[in-house]
Image (cartoon, rainbow, N blue to C red; front, side):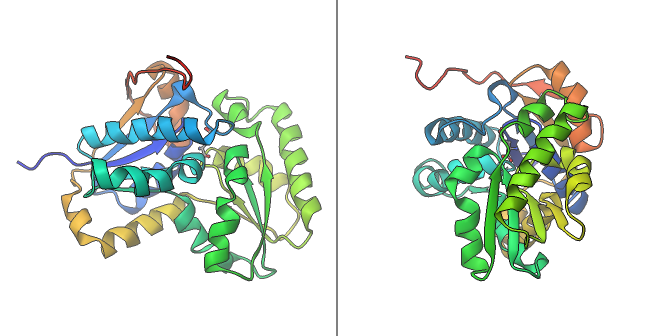
Length: 282
Ligand code: DGL
């Protein structure tokens, strides 16, 4: 019998589950293995070196589990670690395996949603500072003006289950105001952090009329389907029994209590004990 080769889906915590949810809807036949590095989340304010180190460790774990394809369902990891992993690590550690992110499939299509050619990006501090969105959008839609706003409080509010509380409204309003102060021509706003769909209703409430609010799940799922069609050699090795397994580097009880809000159904997770050392530990 052929070995299990699930598709790996990674995030710093719960956010990637909003992407996995849409991937599973679009491509239910595949096996999926999810890892949330909750013990070290959030990644958003961490340095390039740290995000790269943590992400690479997790990618190696996926490879050890038999995955040939890993999706970084985290904008911060996609912005800060993906290129180094693809260019520097994969050729030596696993040249036949693939690691993909969420920024490329999103920037390939985002320009189609805007008629004013002004797009707003809401993301973590790390994603904004990386400049990945403006750089990538420029390649596909050079006419589009990109306005970015870092929302450092949003992931902690979500990870701590405070996103439905009235206090969250303050931070949502504050960042939308600051985004639209950059330009009142913005007609499309992207939630460029996979945690943010949980705040979607609150964000929609405070958006100016007529602005399209996009989250990435469906876009990434469609991009993955297209990618697998273009790469039948990879599609064929990914196992297809419709299984889903979930791992977290922190408490499985917490993970199982919170995951359903992101994934849309109950999950039963397993604990993964990565060697948790801070980057400057000896
Ligand atoms: N879901 C991650 C992203 O898309 C969250 C980042 C974090 O851990 O701060 O950027």
